[in-house]
Length: 449
Image 1: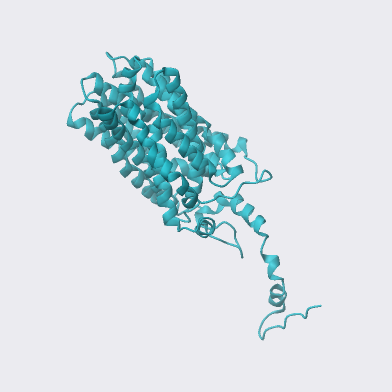
Image 2: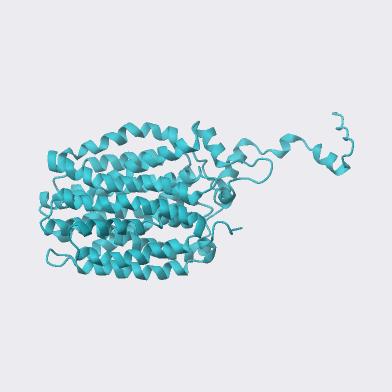
């Protein structure tokens, strides 16, 4: 029998009894700690810790333990991976006029192709649920490879049905990638979550901006079949994902269940808001290059309008993340739908230099809310943050793609103005959804409990 510990001079008996508690009893077993870290992920991110008490650990410590890299290297590496994934998955609008010509398709078919590309992303919430259960980072690698390979084969499709299958593959690959990648990236941020998540989102934004013009240059000089060149960077990078991506612990089946009834209203309002934004974004990216081509412009010139909008939009991504951390989420949501509503309609009327100026301005305000919507989605589904990421990123993209498909039947070479009015009105109305989101999800970050 071990001797009781001697009472220190001046110490109280109560303190002595607490000190006599075996140290091992204060620390859960490693497997229990892992489950606690995952279970407390969303609830304790705001104060930078996962468990209160003796076993408190910041996510930065967890990342180093799992990946042996710093949080900064992990964040920058994941931003690069996001650049490659979203570049491969979103360059189609830059070469869409050439694809329509090569397959002898009407302008109205553009909506169908864009819908096929993005509708697969509607599966993101469900793949996000699977990602939380599975843990790890395998879905990030699988999604990157599916997007890259599918994107590299677009130029080799000699039939519409083959092209549609490739576009669906790209959409599913993007759905595999985003929920787990977004949850893993947020897990590296103990503080300044809006800004640091914006760094990750900016990687994807730059990919979507640069690749349409790069793809159009490859097509103009080497032809559509040479688009396979775009696959090479992803193939080289894929093994490095295992180094950069934090290895998330799996969420056990016995963990906290998703409270569907409680989440239904805020999730629906967020989906409405983000779906309208996706609808307008996809529509603009689809029909502006076609409108430019119909008016006699070059393929590269039309793609450069997209690149300008998305590249300058990086400013909006960074500014939105920065301002979200300081002003709260509601002001950002409102600016990001009202300002684009004002700027969208003139796109159909301006020409020359002012078209690029307008596209750049539109990109800034349209992407202000990117990090805010992801954070809201993850906060709504605190017990399953990857599912919340999927709601904010994927389901909205799928719904927006279907709406672009519907609106595509209204487009013809003689009338390409009406759709821009529809985009503007829809964006303006989405402000009502933002105002209706429950206030706890629109908090000022400094005043939240």
